[in-house]
Image 1 (cartoon, rainbow, N blue to C red):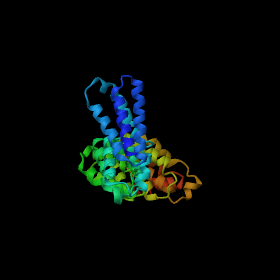
Image 2: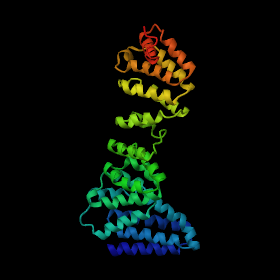
Image 3: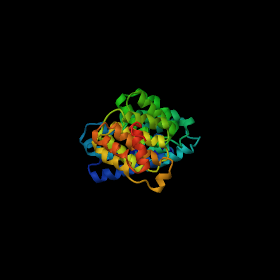
Image 4: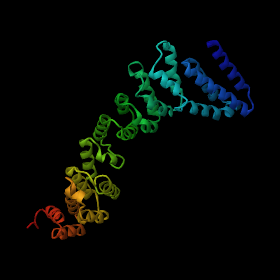
Length: 348
């Protein structure tokens, strides 16, 4: 069967090199792609590698035929790098046949390196299934090779990578240029694993590379250190964009929160980063009647207290006036929040 496979590949390439008709060349390329898939399925990786190497050689020649075949070869490489084309590798990685010789496995790693960097999209979901004890170093090195060449794609698949694979990739990410590394880590900061999010966030913090706009969704992360640090960084400068994001976050995400400290921290950040455009929102949060749900919720009063403190932190006459008027309100929780924000000066 090995001779048959080899002969079929030889015949297909001879026919391909003799073609002048584009449609016939396309048909032969489809045969080659099918043969490539068969080789993967049968774990005959050396033959699959041979197909890719030969196509590479044809593509690197400077002939009229090369110009005709170039787009067809490029299309084939793109096609075989897709997850559906590499489905048979999942079976191999998850239940590897011990009888597969080492030289066949070596050919597999070589052929993966010949594929476009988009192959990372197919490999990333497999990272939790691969036998890392057997294939770990070689599997990781594929992501290192392509990650340096195409950090964008590595960033895009980073949250699909297994926790252990992410940890093993961190030394590599630290070595590559800072711009690429920061881009990858900023994406990886949204990994489902809290351990990865924490490691990555602290690394970005160490590099002074935390992009608060991009990492804003982590403002309600399970990790209190990430939450507090991000709120602290957000509070360092006035930003109209951040102001809107915080208003939206308070309105949509923490309305029913019972964590008073977190609620107050969000309002404090809004007071420090915001300006005139958040005054109507804060006024509404302060003066609107409490529903029964928020009135008796453990974090209910924190919204009014936070809104009053944020208005004072804005350091604007219009905002201060709202708090001063609120200190004389007939509504107890509004009056209490405003007096507290004014430092007790209007307390009775």
